[in-house]
Image (cartoon, rainbow, N blue to C red; front, side):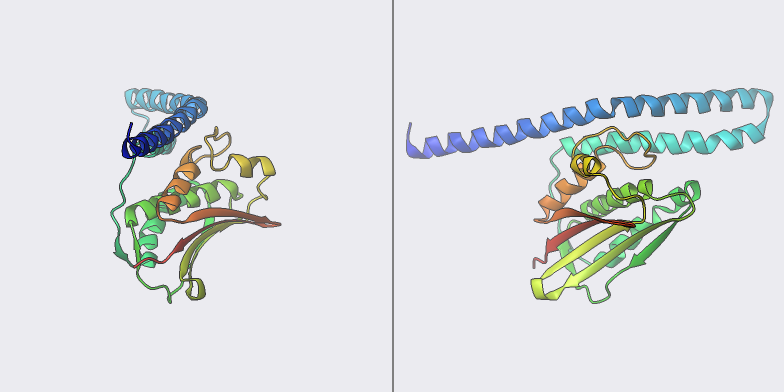
Length: 244
């Protein structure tokens, strides 16, 4: 075997190892989330039965009460499955110069329906000095959405506050997207599992693979999401180099 063939063989082996690791992670994610999906299906089935019976009796008040349960859990199930499919499929970036603040405003608008289900305060502090950045807006939008959903799950009802910030770090030629919440401090155990597949337990909006997918998107953009917890505030900060 020539030196060139040997190098090609080593490269192919490394690619296969990475691919195998990727699919193993996805399989673990599906296994960990299967219980959560089962619970969602049970809630969907129960709500659908109530609605079906209410239609037969023409009791529209019961339909109106059960519809939000059915609708929200169908959306949860779809989000779980789409995150798994998104993680398992290698997504090629489609970068373009973007106004990041405007892109994130669209993400925030998509959370209005969740705001009707869980009462919390959403604050946006978007840095007007941030220049156009070369990113895949759809992927960065998905990353930010998963960071926000994770934060929403952590905050208390009524008194919950979720804050999203953008910041231009001119001295480092970087930009940052930070999502913080005023929920209970993340436990060391929760911090360890945040970027790995895990069952969602009490969570209602995020998925057990959402933050793993968010980290994958950050790495694709040569960035990384970091966790910082203090009394009264948990923060997820995604930091990226500014590329022309």
